[in-house]
Image (cartoon, helix red, strand yellow):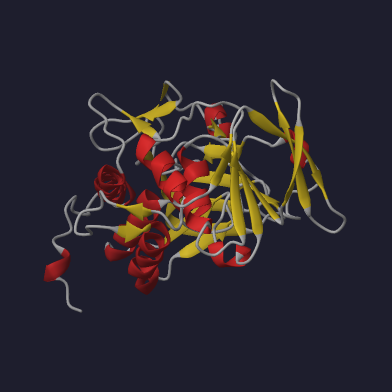
Length: 337
């Protein structure tokens, strides 16, 4: 049940036309489109940088299904989306989680963040992908997070010359191993099973690079004073132990997705996704959604689909904010440069 947020004196308050929750590809394209329509737009994300899962999980990986790009690196796609929206003075609230949603007397949405910021918007567009995703922890890595143990590799150059141990058997683990092999001193991949979740082509690529793959084993301990210096690997059956030099340990054990506070907002959910209609409207007034977080009959979860949904959501939100506004604002080619 919504409750009106009524203590603006103590909380920073931002007034905007459209609040986009989620700074992944769909959210960034929605920011561009809202600016294109002449709307003030604010983008909020719990992560400290734009790009969502792309920036956090595979910034260096090539993406092949973006229209007009035979191949584009994840980081480059995000940079281009930010640049596309830049002329419209988008306001970013990064590192802040949307916690509470309420509606004012005029039904304008009011969103409070975990940092205490209140955003009052003409409409909200939720583009949070899978919601909040939390990496599965490496039990042996407790105490070394940020001191050599990482979950993602947003900047591979930071690991140049390192002995690297990658833990996991999925696509991310093999992608990180292949990505770091050309610049690292050594790369070793450790997986608890001899069977991998990763695509066979990814496994073969890593093998072809000469990367050692240790199977049926677990990282049982990390050692080092100021940071990671070596890794203890224990065979699960034979119980033998190996000591590996390591300055970087990448725990690529997957992640847990959670809609978090959004689940308490009264949104209609279907299998942990937000139900929307053909306008990308949710069951709540002035609240829309786009991208992977949405669900409807025939839904296809592709970045390219999310772009179209973001434009649809913004255009329909514009008509709610201003009933005299046209649903279709015209083509961008019709606008003066």
